[in-house]
Amino acid sequence: MPGIDSSSSARLDYSLPSRLEEIAALANAVEVFLAADPQLAFQTNLCLEELLTNTIVHGLHGEPGHVIRVSLKRVERGLEVTLTDDAPPFDPFCEAAPPDLDADLVDRPIGGLGVHFVRTIMDEYSASHDGSGNRVVLRKLYGGEAHQSQKQESGNEE
Amino acid sequence: MSLNTTIEGIEGGQLLRVMGRLDSATAAALEPPLLEPFNVEGARILVDFGALNYVSSAGLRVILMGAKKARETRGRLVLCSLQPHVAEVFEMSGFTRIVDIVQDETAGRQRIAG
Image (cartoon, rainbow over all chains, first blue to last red; front, side):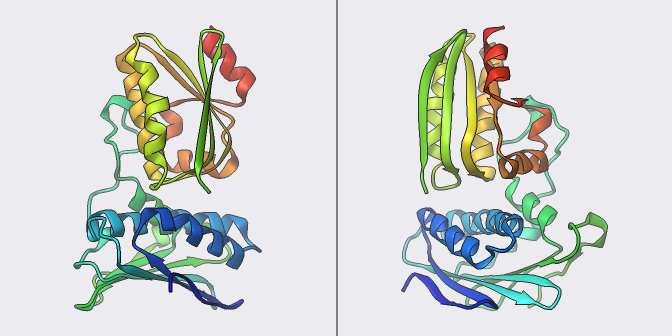
């Protein structure tokens, strides 16, 4: 069944059908789960949409009928977000270089910003695949904005 | 939540109000109302984001297309009334430095009329 699999104050498990139109319903569930912290809910939803859109459009080439599992879990120092799909191996974090944010209007390429948002917002991010699909893990730590210098990027955890 | 737009004529150009959620599922719906006015040389469009709750890179992509097209056709694209979360996405993307953004509709109307 699509939608919320289980939800408690500690974690939210959600099965997302592989269609872009489904992401808004997930966003509502995340807003409810993180109702105490609207800013964190907004940041989490932005990261989720960017990564899920990549997976649906590029990883799955828009094929309906797949399910992407999304989990939000409160951990000791913050929030952990896990995305699991059955798409071919793909690591969003070892792709293109960061966009040039200072480029003039005519030089700005269209696109390429989604992963930049994830890198900017999240304190930790990693991607791995195990033969059946990809797994992306994000962490947002409480008590402080994400700082570029403290950011950890783990490699492929295969 | 979906995306809704309305267009009305204002002094010097058109006012495009964008309401709802501008994401990967809805961004394509913004292309006709935002881009087609610039088929005419020198068009001026004020986009009111006062009732826009959310934008992602898919939405920014359409806005960048509009800004480029406005420049190519010697038109003018002005955005106004960005809500805090929308403004934050514009900041993170660096778009605040390349797109004309004003505080509110009054300032926007002046920019279009001027």
